[in-house]
Length: 200
Image 1 (cartoon, one colour):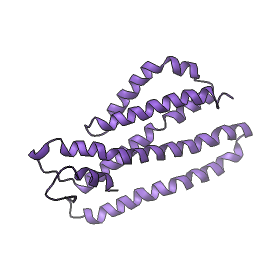
Image 2 (image 1 turned 120 degrees about the vertical axis):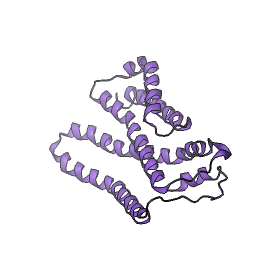
Image 3 (image 1 turned 30 degrees about the vertical axis):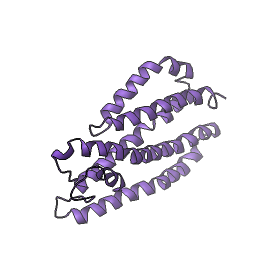
Image 4 (image 1 turned 45 degrees about the vertical axis):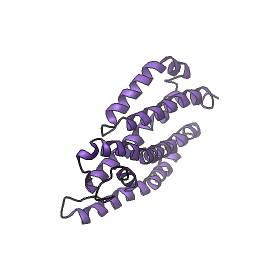
């Protein structure tokens, strides 16, 4: 979990190297439990979704099951993809933030604050990566068409960029840029999917 921060600290030339600080006497005990709890929820999520699907599926018609199944597991896939994407993009943003003041300040990241920041970024990316699932679901039930999405392209791009700037924590320019690019690609992919496989 500390990998993105360690990669950023390589560029700070801090006299403390890649070490982090804790500012609470109970942090050494509390942080491992918090990390274990979050990790447990993440690892259990696919099992929970699968059990919910097994409970709900018998009450659905065949066509409803055919429609619901890919969207349920598509939701899991894109959330995981968003979290993974954030994990690899985060070092770039952290490097910018850690080196912004140059040699005028010594960067001493607090471990608890960093883990909270990491969890928030992963959550934001995971939730926003659900956009193609929502668009394709609306296309599947007939509310949206590929023609409508094409006609809304320019305002959609503007909204995507605005949302990326608002929801990403921190003040670096890189994290919202990468998020915007990913969402624009998903928007275009949703148009192709609704017009192609979903239509047929």
